[in-house]
Image: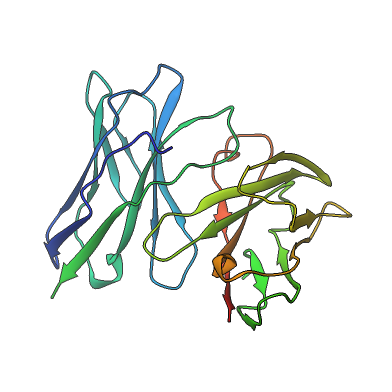
Length: 110
Length: 116
């Protein structure tokens, strides 16, 4: 079973920052937080991952709370192409498979 | 583009027939994964290979399902005696087994199976 809880859907205006929350209150010390997204009719795409520290790459930023029980994925300037289902995943890097939940369906509004 | 490719993209079959899907991973990736996704759900893990060895199988993978990766390159997923409940998107992913980017799985576009 997925170890994360996400809202089923969210809206965000184009050009604004999209902040997607994720709860993972049972995360253990050696588990990472991963984010993938799935655009309609495509396979999932890796976005970012982190353990304790906040992370940033060309796609997004990941903010992890100090107690690691929740995190937020930030898309700084959302575009229509960011409309997708976003999956927050908790994963031990020694575990090869990914356990997906239902994710958050993000709608970017023009 | 040398991403993960899957064939066919769509397959319609009648209940009871056998079907086979193919996945070609990114060439230097030694790990290959199969997932299944039904409408409104996230992908569910089925099985994975490191090179030609099948290392883990989910309990979702019934006896009617078999996967192979004979030369450690492409993989096939066969479903025998298909049932309507097998209708789903079948996703393949690959990754490097070791190294900095080993955590990142690259997914193909999927094969959508419809069993009538």
